[in-house]
Image (tube, rainbow, N blue to C red; front, side, top):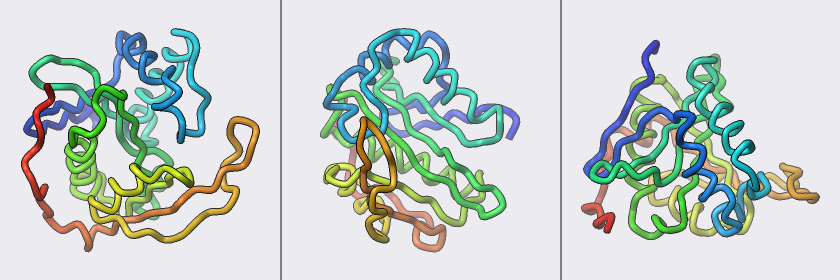
Length: 192
């Protein structure tokens, strides 16, 4: 893969993150509700957001993963991000990560975006296994993964140290053999 891949769904375009995205992403990444279950503190400055955009945007160039900006096809609005990190090519696996601005919650957007990303992970990145770690207590994220076919493997106790304390992580996985050409079960809701 030498060119960053863009993905399209009925409502969304998943594209490369660019420096100009930092300001819009800061709105999401500074929101305590959006960041509640992430292992990062809410961001306070544009410089922090720029650094994160550089880090996430550089995953692809460094062969360490990929992070897409999730945009509305009709408006071009940046809604959040998703992609793979902690990729272990020799084991054909990667870890799925994602977040979405609060205004886009409960509209099926992340389901639609992750469906495309997971399909890409299995077909183009040649993953055998996709993992997802969810901070203990984040029931919405856990329900999303179950809806996408992920199996719950258990609790990784005190797995991450963040915000001054140890956090447990629920471990989920999806194998290529379990994915096999699935289709979204219902039509997406409007972005309006």
